[in-house]
Image 1: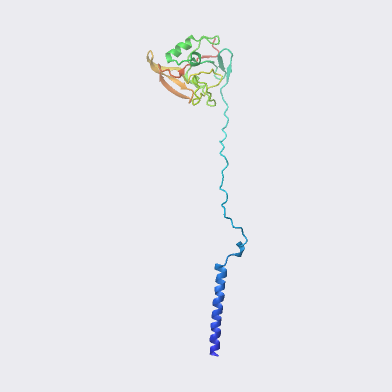
Image 2: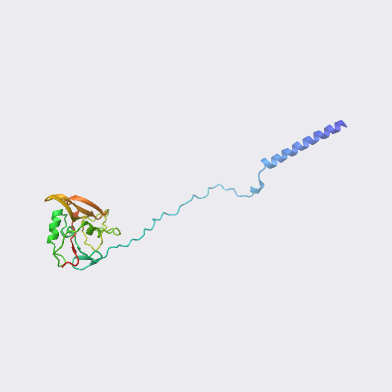
Length: 208
């Protein structure tokens, strides 16, 4: 009787050990049947390709300058009440002028039937600077330095223009304000400076 109980106990121990072993094999070692039918992918998915770069659209700016060609070598700016020579001194003569040479030029100018032309002030010149324009119309037509100047003006322009505002110690000694039409900068230049510069003559529209 005691032997039978020992045999039974031994049998049960062996039975449960074998059962436990099968359970471990099924749960831990055996493959998952849920993925048995899945297709094995040995190739990588295609790399992400960004869409081609597109330059953002620039907001179109509208010029606030209203110039009217008069057909006689002059342009009327009705907003400022000024009459401008269509050709500046560089476009007219094909060379740069110092401040004194520019003064002599406007005093002798006879354009549009008028002889009372003068040098403009910086404020008057600034009314012509138009940041909406990029025109390759300077005397050397350098595409890297377009002018912020209306295309109604004559081709062959100077890059900067003298103003009447100056400080003169002695004749040809001193400086005067100029406006650079590539960037819109105002500079003080020596009166005898010349390179790339000139003058654009102006007169008050109603002066007769």
